[in-house]
Image: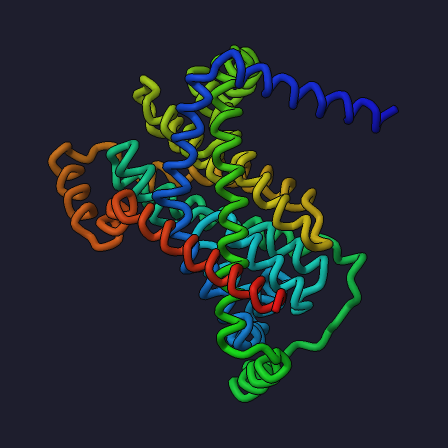
Length: 401
């Protein structure tokens, strides 16, 4: 009976989307174009170098080296292998869903167990600082000071999630009381053994890295476009406003403005759209806005969660612990934002001081790079896709001959 209800629900959901595409063709086309522009101009060119580099580092044994080196640090705090430090750093630097992608690769390489992978993915799939500070805080809120608050809240609450998840699955896990000591020699030996064990030549490793990364990014692009359309349809047919009324009641319990209900609901599906709606809300309370944005950053949005679920489906890593961690992260981030707001964010700043801060931030190389992605991103995407296609055609030709 339960299986039949699930089948009927999924069929009805697909049917409603199909009807929405027919009834609102202009809005769905606009949403699709917006999703393509995000993927084409920003996501693909910004994530591809990280994905390819990570594949090379795994193939050459550098991740194994880092794992042995940081084992004495990561194991006591997060109860994951030292290789988790590499995933954590890359996840923060490149943003979602890099943490899930790299965790899945480590699991496929059998460098971590299933339980360790489920712990690791729960706190390594975070937003990158450039998106938080440049895109959201400066680009949408026009407030660099808010960006530093959001970044501190996001990463500190993320680390707390990792610490809480260290206790997950301890009963299912075999106890190992041996604690390794810091040893560069042992780490290098592990690097050398890993490289020797991988018999692929450099050209094959590099080609695999590009093809695998492009395939993952194509999947990510599909999810971004589809969820952009779904979010737009929910807004147009009135489902989002209707369901956000229930969310407004919850916000009132925590003394938050009910006007944030619809933006938060939209952010549950797509982070960027939710953040934009929160920024455009006619509210004077920056505290309420910072709490709302912190929550949707932590929750990741169903679009990112669907990407993570698709990546994890290639392994035995279960999605449910990750989803639970997102709820925990959202609660912790909202609470920390409330606690740190009076100390980190200064509401008495003068307009000239804020303008000076924004101008200084805009002059930095990182912000200039983020702006240039909209101009050069499509070119980088086209070149990368061309390289990946040529590699795949060359391999097919070799196999055929």
